[in-house]
Image (cartoon, rainbow, N blue to C red; front, side, top):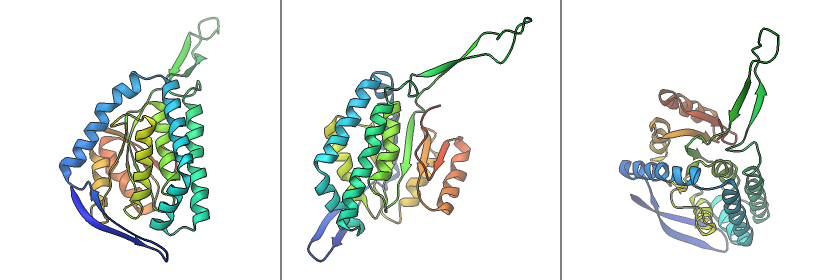
Length: 254
């Protein structure tokens, strides 16, 4: 685990701390395995209602700490405080939505039954087709600096609602906002390993992204950022035939 000195300054305040970054190959492997180990209990041993409750509690804790989170976001990203407060409200809207989605028939465990397109000799449908929605598995997300809350909740919310586990690599420019979200997720009852953060510096970011793409344990990757990087991630994910979402929320059901 590498450590570097992180400093943010504005006209009123200076924030300095040591931030640990998970750049060591062994550590990255361990975090992915930790997420994989947490998958079965979260996917198979919880109800959709419980997952919905956890997301709602996480949303409420973010709302309760909105001023502090907005201050952190402003100090590290440079957004006006009013915009940061607006993003907090925007970000929790995804958790609220997917807390509701978790218990809808369209979520994991739900599905549909349709008449078969094949017919009997009399022309009647030859049986029925049943489709069941299931969680994909371990998912990995890479989020940008300009929406450090909303892009995390927009990706992690549906993943957790469906029963997936999620590993997030926030932008190296805005790790503190992501860490604040992780602290509140833990307090809300998100089990250990279900939502993990991998922080990195600029030099090690590419290595983290590569590990997400080539590691066969990860079944889904979602990225919001530049087109060239998205194309590279898609190319590297092809050998393991991962589901890839670029620029949008992860579609975590199949």
